[in-house]
Amino acid sequence: MEAVGFVELLAAPAGKRHWSDEAKGRIVAETLVAGVSVNEVARRHSLKANHLSAWRTLARQGKLVVPEIAGAEFGAPSALPEPSETPVTTPIDLIIGPVMLRLDPATSAARIAELVLALQART
Image (cartoon, rainbow, N blue to C red; front, side, top):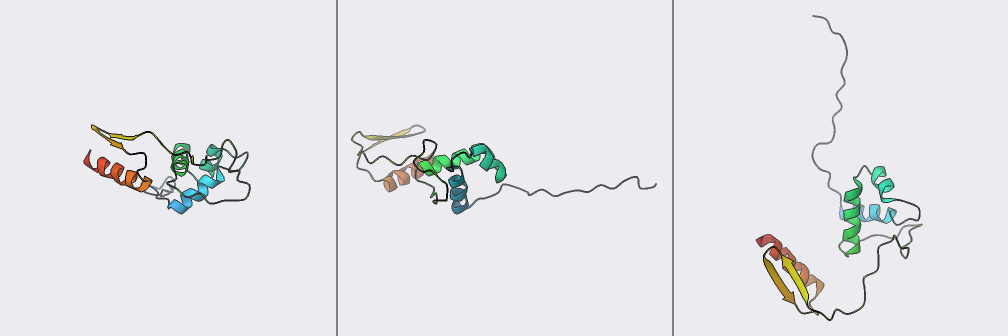
């Protein structure tokens, strides 16, 4: 038998990539520059746009730190909104699966996060 050709195999990265919170924050900050789209930034970093959108949601919720970068418009409509300073006066309802907790409006964000994690672990 004689050789008829050459085949080159390129190895692709195996498994999922894990991004540090710092890297996620820098990438989200790039989406805040005027004229830059989420899709454009996602392509530049070989990400899916929906993953980047999820990171933007985390930043909007205060769960991801976004550094300031040149050209970013933090006050623009497409930028992440500032958290409201208006005090909450209605009870906070946590509903996870079959469990519902009604919390006092003065409950701290840290305590709410603890309760959410505890409820998620039980369901």
